[in-house]
Length: 371
Image (cartoon, rainbow, N blue to C red; front, side):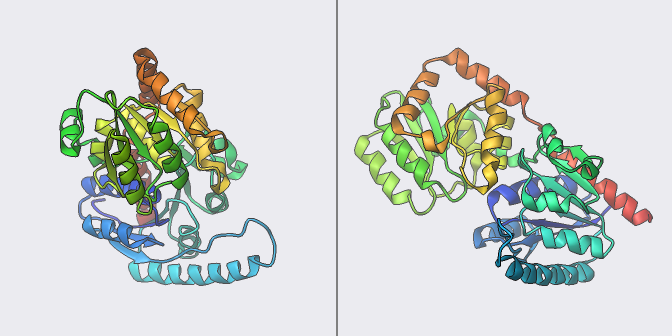
C-alpha cells in the first residue's frame, strides 16, 4: 500500500499537536502520497503552524467532561452528541482509512464517530497516567499506544490486549542545532552556565515569578538565562532581567526549540508529556515543577524522571526562590551529578517513537483496506 487517508484528532495546544505532527511527518516521509487531515480545537497560532507545514486543519471543539456527576452532565452530553454528529459528517465526507486521537476531549467525538462509521481507531496516550477521555475511548478503540511502558497498568483489562508501547513522538527539527551555533544565534555566551526556563506554550506566572527571584541569587558572571515567558509576562521579565544585569534572552514563544535545547546546560520547566519527551531525547538534566492540576498528570510524568535520577522535582506547593536557587547552584557546581542525570535522561528516550506510531497506523490501515 502506497498511501492512506488519515484523520488526526487532537487538543489545541502545542503539547498535543507537536507529537501528532511528528507522527504525521514520519508517515508522510514513508508514504508521500498520503492525505492527512487534522481536526480539533486549535488556537490561531497552532492552526497557522499546521497550515505552514502543509496540513489541512478543521476546527472542531470537543466538550470537556465535568468532574462530578451533577447537573452539568446534561449540557455536556448534548454538546458531545452534537460534536459526534459533526465528526461523523467530516468522516463521511473525507473517508479516512484510520482515525487517530491524540487525547483530550477534542479527540473523543472522532473516536466515537470512527467506530460508528466502521473506521479503525488508534488512541495515543501521552501521559504516564491516562486521561479521562482516553480511558473512556480505550473501550472502543482498536489500538492504544502509550508513551510510558507502565501506563498499561492503568487501563481496564479489556483494553490491555490492545496496548502497544511506542513512546511519545518528537519532531525531527527539534534536534537540528549544535550548542555553539545555538548560543551564537540567541546572542548568548559560550562560557556561561545556561539555564532554560519554560512554563509551557502559554508560559507560567508562578514559575516566572519564583525564578526571577531565584535569579537574583545567581552570579551574573557565571550564569545566563534563556526564558520562554509566555505573552503576558514578557515585558515584566525583560524589565527585571535588565535591572539585575544577568545575561538573558527572553521570548514570548520560541518556534525553534532546537536552539533552546542545544544551548542549555539545565532546564527548569513543567513536566508535560511533550516536554518530557523532548528533554529526554536531548538527554538534558532538569528541575521539574509539575502543573498541580489537570488530574495530576504532570506530577506522575515528573516522577518517572525523578525515580530514574534524571531530574529534581519540586512540587509547586513547595516551590520558593531560595530552594530553586539552591538546586540550580548545586547542580552547576557538581558536574558529575549533572552528567549522571543527563545520561539517565537520555536512557529514557525513545527516539523512533514517531516511526513506531506511524507503523501502528499503517497496520490498521492495511487491515481496513483488506476487509
